[in-house]
Length: 271
Length: 291
Image: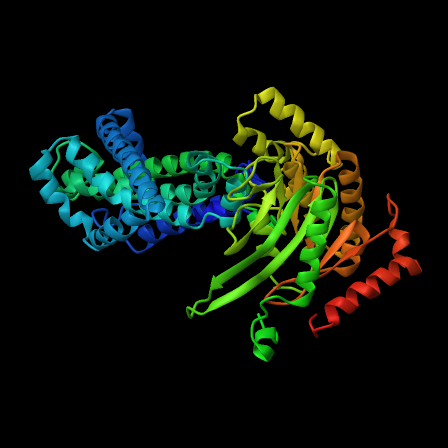
């Protein structure tokens, strides 16, 4: 997120061009050099902190041997399925709560109360209920990712500009038209802000689920490597996890930029 | 909002102010003369709000008057005098507490087909480009997409925005945004255009230019226009008749006809004739210490 912030003032569809991303890339490179040098100079043992070059070797080996592929694939499916469940339930429930005042008074307080339960603590229960397979992980991912979507959909629907609704009423639009033409588009920037958080949360959910009980998946691979103090191996898995998270965030951002480009400069609209 | 000295503070709520009685008589005479030719009739329209502390507040008090087809009428009054409330009742977006507003002889009880509305702010949809914004009313009505396109393009041309069809609201100036909103209001060939201080947010230069444009558009389309404003010069320049409102509770203090031939030019605002109208209107507004 932080690297993309710099592009926000530019017109929409501005890709992360080389000159813009160059300072960040150079800084990252410099940090890696410092890391590499410190490990050598301070003689840190490899089972505490491996050098970036060792990690890079392991990342390459994991891919070349094909070892990482089933783990990566399964975790990806869990994250994506969990995320999609969260989107459907979050948008559906959020829309219902946002549009029906009675639900806002009955269901929403319960959801808010539920939110205070640390959901990762439910993971062991989910394993009991849904088994060691991918179901429990996808549900864990959905459970964590669902809330930011719900809250943002509700906030988006509640902040709909009442003058636009009034205009639609003056045009004798029916409630469905008002929803499709005003409330839904106004809500989109909020929804996508929620989705950007949700995709990362979804990854956290899947990994926590795998920590608690799984034999395949990047999370379970971390546990296996931790057991044999394979620190470079854990770093390798972390690298794959970051790549997965980054790729999915960028995809959400890509879609968001195309659907909500207008909201960036909304303060300029005298509408 | 600072509380103005209300009339009821001085002598209690007026039930039938003299001005209103005169207006009512005029309305009755007009009705008798031209039976049914009036497009809009205000018949002792009043609106009472319940304030936050539960006290009833009379925003509009017993307004009567008529507006003929093709007429350009301004509703002029100090800020917060209930002009917008009156306009909302005319547009069918608010129900009067007492009396009724009639359009083509029938009581207005909800939004009407054939009304175009322009608010103080353009109220455009920022996710739609200019063309799609102007299409909105035809879309809601369910016209064919070819017809939507034809009407929208025609109206965009009418308001002088050809070439800007694919621009988004945030790419336009305030004046251009308000033009889009006027094009949108006109896109269903409304028999009545209701405008609530549409140029209030614009700078003086743009405002004059928009006044000229509006005159041209109203002459070209022959639409009846009800124009709410707190600018005396704007009301005098644009209107066939000016309804001068008093402060809260709002009533029609006088209806002033402006007999300057059209099309009027901005330079005419410097003539003695125009000056007399402005002086007269200002006198009416000042009469009770408002503005």
